[in-house]
Length: 332
Image (cartoon, rainbow, N blue to C red):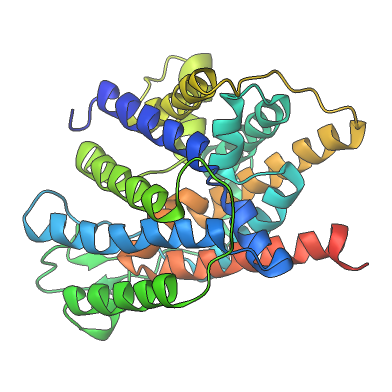
């Protein structure tokens, strides 16, 4: 299963099934905690991150994986992250949200994902690649003994631990304890849901760990998968692990929606919704392409590394989300 297409597909199906059952959308989680004082989804996401923070470190310690934090390009993570945050409000869902909703029959999800793939591909490998290059080159940390990190010529993307020269176990434990303190010692919003936020978060975190073991180079992601699906389908390029993972998310969400009788082809009546899906998908795709990842690649999978790139990108995902929601709905 390690590195195989079937491995990516299995991980994706599990992830898609969970996303559909838990309604885990980071656009909603970020928006709700600010504008509706509802922290149910926010806590679910942080629970997954807490599980992965310890889980990734443990896996690296026993040699199952090498930690591979995302490249740190500050301007890219700031600008791209903010654009992505705005885009997911317009699209009505984050990268994973629009993906799993395709499996539920959401037409806007198909539109948003299509433009997401087109603009992410253009930013990384196509017509907009020269613009992406303007944001600069990755900043790295040179380590004589990289230990649990995947290093190239001794160079590693900076994390809180390797930047400060601290044992990564110490940083991971402190961060996880802070998260657990917030999760269990603050009030949680009430919500009728098919799965409690603690269970949903733990299961998502475990799937993230399985993904890292299966893929080896990284955990869960969305952006590269959509690029690969479009590229491999339209050219002679081969499908890869993350492409199969994204396809599996749609399949898993479809299976879940069928089992629980929640599948329905949905065509919004408001023409504005289609325009917003196009613009939102394009903004998310370009932003993720520039920033080096989306809410899954940076927030869910990158923050558990305590990667500086992912912490910075996540901060601007949040700011972009809040700003666009305020622009559209909050000023009244």
